[in-house]
Image 1 (tube, rainbow, N blue to C red):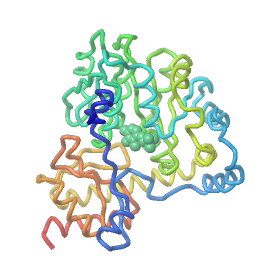
Image 2 (cartoon, protein in one colour; image 1 turned 90 degrees about the vertical axis):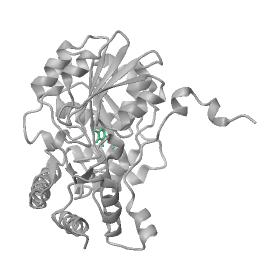
Image 3 (cartoon, rainbow, N blue to C red; image 1 turned 180 degrees about the horizontal axis):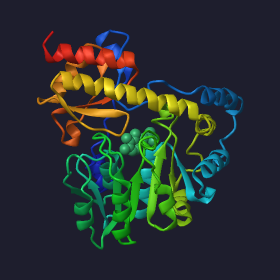
Image 4 (cartoon, helix red, strand yellow; image 1 turned 60 degrees about the horizontal axis):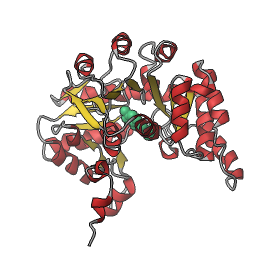
Length: 367
Ligand SMILES: *Cc1c(COP(=O)(O)O)cnc(C)c1O
């Protein structure tokens, strides 16, 4: 009998699927407990904003119709906000879809893709799926080593993925360092600058990568509505690039990849600066709440520019993760990122953070 697996393309045969954070409902079923706190997927603990909620209510009226396949209104709002043309924007079903579109548009089995050790898990997946070769550079203090990455560029290299800040480490590169890096990158290499946590960073320093689009025809900036905007469940992300790259990405994009509720909510969310402001404020507070307690517990952590922090437990993280689950707290093991002694904690509300910290203290002292 034919082994069906042998019929799949080689890259897919060897693919190890992405493991998402455990959903609350699943843990509730397993353990029969309620009031579970999930700090595992870097979602917005304050939830969706009022403007986005109202836009969704409104858009419900027209759900029998296909969405606007061009995403006109959302693109128009994005174009105004970031001073780019609508033709430079590609909308994705989450920015993960954009990463996949880039791989499909630019990679063959002959190509190489460079990314860092501990980098976001979707880069190896999209690379592997199209059968291209992953070139992983060793991390530098848990962050990207741009010099090493440049060093690995060959004639076969077609994409370099840079996550800034990176997930799960939270490490942030200096803007000047990235600009210098792209400047030195040959033009046959596409630089994907993944700014999923842009809204958290933009409060710390002036982030101006969009202005580089004028001088770097090989730059793609990806951003998302899943993190600071609190719309992870709707799946909306986008990229900003030059017009030619956007044209190529839009050729492989499905015509209705964003649903009507998502398009309406994302557009409204962009105009809700207050919701982003209180989200970032909550994040700054929570980050201090967590790291102050880590310090008191004699634990170290990787300083993070995102809405999460990876803490070094100095012992295997998985058993601690399991014990935290039994106390009703879901965090994220990062052993698959070659960080077996760490757990990644998403910043929650002050109450959620306190519940996690209490559970962690109990677990570490065997209470
Ligand atoms: C969360 C995340 C994304 C994308 O999430 P989407 O929900 O698909 O937009 C992309 N890159 C990094 C580094 C992330 O952490």
